[in-house]
Length: 82
Image (cartoon, rainbow, N blue to C red; front, top):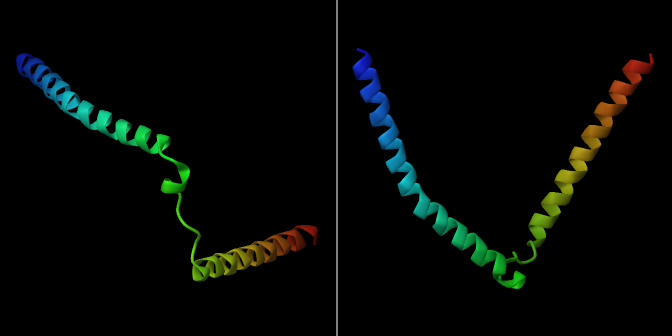
């Protein structure tokens, strides 16, 4: 039984080492792509201005979030001061 556990542990260690060795080229490739993007001119990477509908939607969402937060804080403050 102990021998089986030892063999299983050695087998797992070998399998893990092989798997790690396969991951290394993928990590290097991702690093190369990231460094390439970092060195690109910003105007080529940056997103263009948001469309008008997206700006309006963001403004409406912000307004709603601020008003809800204000109402919740007012309620909490009024309950506490009573």
